[in-house]
Length: 470
Image 1 (tube, rainbow, N blue to C red):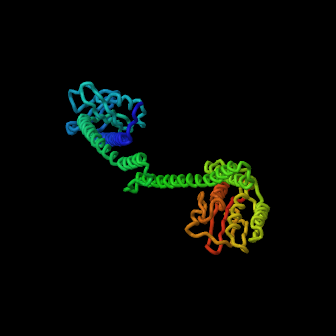
Image 2: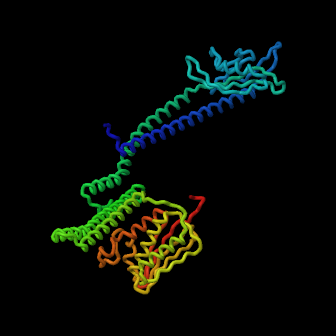
Image 3: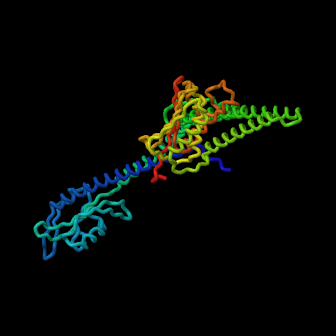
């Protein structure tokens, strides 16, 4: 299997590649700008020389032929000057032994156009035994007559320009190579420095893996992306630690819950064996503990389905008023006249949900309220609309209340406020956890408010039914 390249190496390579591209673009830009500037300077010199010569020249007729009278060409030593007739013949040249035209193609191209359309033009001519030259072709037209008398070509060698450009190219290439080497070294150093915090996170993660110490945290020293990665890693460790502790507590609570009924069943079975006959009280005890274990397993299965997002529900529009009235009747039966159970629903409230699951939640809340309300107290079930498109169902009592230190934990699994009460008679502490899971599966929320000695209120919010969204 081919080993993958490390991120540090990839960063160094990418840094070098980007820097090389930047150097290349910079070099091409500098070379192009300098070349353009030098050519522009040469063209300006040629145009000025041609204008000076043209201003001192004159055209006329001699023997019926057009002639051009030029100034002394030796005055223009910086350039090569050549006068060409209308038919393409050389009339005069600043170089006596020049045996070729400076740029006959430019003259021929210009002769193909009407006189009115002929404009001065710059060209670059290459000759086999001479360096390239820059040529400026200028038509000589009489100012008054408008007649074409010939052409003037002014040229200069580009050898100095080419030498300067070759020197610049060599300088740019040398500087680019040195810069690329330096950038590669700097890129490797920067990549190593940038990856050092990631290496610390990796080392910490591996140490946590080998030592199984979820209490260890990554040392976060920066506030950049890597620092935020370290904070996220620490938060994940906090979450994993809490989940691990919750799992340990969950296993311990389940073991404790299962051990008690199993002990009772085992004791009654041993008693039946010793007696040699089936005792009704022993059989009732076995049946009761079996039912309790069945309820516990069912509750655990429901919570597991809720955690996996697979809680079975049959959702439909539900009128809250009949459901609340039914729960109130069941609560009155559970209270057996010891406390008063009242209900009220403001208007017609319609929610979209599973009626059996919502009733299960309300019955659980009412049952808890009845259990913890002294004789003569009141349990109220109230339903109302809210401005946020939610339906509020509240179950309140005038009971003993919940201490402030217990309020944040009442929805945790196996958590019981009254720790002195035997689990055999006080339940397993799963009811509120199940209620929270059911409400959240409906897209709602549940909260608790309580004052010790005054009473407790559980508020349940469920989304109101909206036909257009269902």
